[in-house]
Image: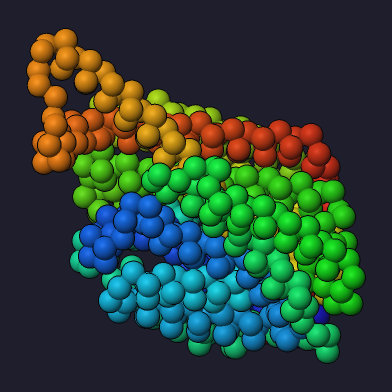
Length: 521
C-alpha cells in the first residue's frame, strides 16, 4: 500500500516542481526584460542623440521618461492587480511593453521615441508588481519562496548590467534593435503566463483614481524639476525648476491626505506603518538612485572618455552581471541563517565603497585598475542589498495588500532611479560648468602672460571654444562624473546605515510569514 502511494505521489510532486520552475522562468524573464530596459539604451545614447537630434540637456529623458512613467504608475499598476487579477495585469502589461518597444524601434523623431519610452514604463508598471505579488501567492513560504525571491532580486540587480551588455551588442548592428529585441521576448512571456501562472482572486472594490492622479502628478513634478535644474543655463532659482519641485512635494502631501480618506486607497498607509517595510523602501529608494546614475554616467564615460566602442562598453559591465549572480546565490542561502539587517547593511557598505572607487577616475584611468575592482565590489554589495530588502519589504503582508506592497517596493527603486539620474545630472552639470570656468580662466591667464591675442570676432570665439572643448572636454566630463559618484556613494551609505539601525526582521520570520501559497499544477 505504501509503495503505491509513493508511486502515485511521485509524479505529482515532480509535475508541481517542474511547473513551479516554469512559473519562475516566466516571472524572471519578464522582470529581466523590464529592468534591463532602464539601461539598455544607455550605451546607445550617443547614436540615438546623433540620429534623432537630441540635445545634451534632453538626452537624459531617453532614460528618465521610462523610469518616471514606470515609477509614478507602479502604485496604480499594483492596485489594479489586486482588484482585477494579477495574472491578467501581468499579461496585459507585458503586451503593452512589447508593443511600445516596437513603436520605439520604428520611431522617426525625438517625440515619438520619448512617447514609446513612457508607454514602455506604463507596461512595466502593470507587469512588475504583479510579478512580485505572484511569487508570494505561487511559491510556498520558506526555501521555495526564498529561492524565487533571490532569482527575482538578482534579475532586478543584474538587469541593468545585462541591459548595458545587450545594448552594446545591438547598437553595433543598429540602435533600434535595443527596442526590437523586447518584442519576441514579451510575446513569449505573454503566451506562457496563462499556462503556468495562477490567477489571483480579484475583488469588487473601486480604483482610487484621485490618489492615482495626485500621486503620479506629484512624482512627475519632482523629477521634472530636478531634470530642468540640470539643463544648461538653468538654476535652482528658475521658475521652471522651483514650481514643479514645490508643486510635486505639495501634491505628495495631498496624496497622503487622499489615501487616509479613500475607502480603497491606492497605497494603504498601513503598509508603510510597518517599520521594517518603511526602512526597506527607504533603503531601496537610495540604492536605486545610486545604481541607475552609476550606469548612466559610467556608460557615457567608457565611450566618450575611454573611447570604447558600444560592444566593448557593454561587455565592460559583464563582471557586474557575473558578480551579482554569484553573490545572489550566496545571499539567498544566508537569509535563512542570518538576520537581513546584517546582510543588507554589509551589502550597502560594499556598494558604497564601490561607488567611492569611481570618484578616483581620471582621463588616464585604465579598465583593469580604475573600473574592474569597483565594478566587482559593487556587484557583490548590490546582491547582498537587493535580496534581503526584497524579502523584508514584502514580508508579513496580507494577501489583499501584496500587490500594493510589491508596487511600493518597485516604486521606491524606479523613482529612486529617476530622481537619482535627475539629481546627479544636476550635480554633473554644475560641476562641469565650474570646472570649465576654472580651466578657461587658467587658459586665458596663460595666453595673456605669453602676450597672445585674444579672440574678438564671433568666428574666432567659436573656433577658440571648439579648440578648448577638444583639449579639455574629457577632463571636464571626468571631473563632473566623479562629483556625481561622490553624491551617489553618500546616498547608498545612508541607506546602509538606516538598514543597520532600524531593520529588525529576524531571519526565522522569512522562512514562514503566514502566507498560504497557491501551488502551481
